[in-house]
Image 1: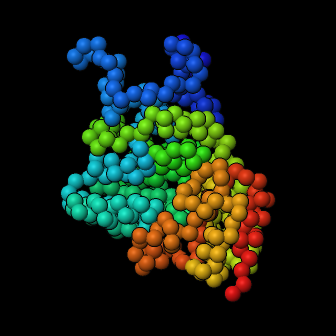
Image 2: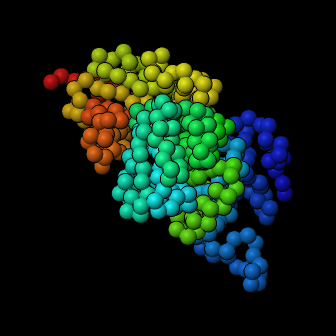
Length: 396
């Protein structure tokens, strides 16, 4: 039984259609519209060297393979490789692309776990990294060394929403045959397509907007370069960090509504950002959809259809103490270390996600004591605003 929507026909379909149908066929045995969960460790083989495409789930699994097709469809990529977590994807990326003595040029504002992984784990194996203000592409050009083997960007960046010009930086990198990796977790391929802008590899924490329901953890690497994909797949087998079949199945269900969700997240975030910008207890709001955003022209050209995602950050008057007051007084919003879900999530980077960074490094990239990261959910925005209004109330 074959789907009425072949992948060839889906090439010209809209995002919402692709997210629902791409990579999925009705089950040939039962006709089930949802792909089965192949919850199995191993597979019976017909003879030595003769199998049905899978031999052991550490290497591959049919449910995970279906998710990978669906992920590739989101970014119009040649393929995807799915992992147990976003950091598992980052680990496999570095182990696949770099060797002892190699160097990474990285945008200065990135997920704290990425910094911790490279600075405290991979540095022991002779891999070095330079954190560069990538808002100016020329800074990237000047930071490239003879042993630079990767440019790693996160845009919009976690947690300050700082942007990097993917096209300009990719042009600089490719002139020196250096691949460009873009962490596209915040926007997904619905709102930003790094491969079309010149990047070579996309990194996802699928835990966030891809899943969208706080149900799973996962990660992925996507590319149009088949050699890269083969290396990621090979090293995933060696490391043993494939995504679990149940997590893959749940993630696929989230992808069906991805187009609807990220656009509504964006609308809600715009409303919340505009409210915060006028609040007397808020000194600064970071959101690419605001006229006050310093990189608004780049946001307009790089983000798709006028949407800028569901993430924002803001500085409160009163610094650390006031920020903790807000954290401890929200009612509707959830205090948690995650983002991108239907529920609104509030985080204090200085004491949570970026607590392991050196204070000087944290402050240098704009993660101040009073900075709050806000993942705007799908609740009625008026309710989110009311909750923030009461939590921001502050007298010292």
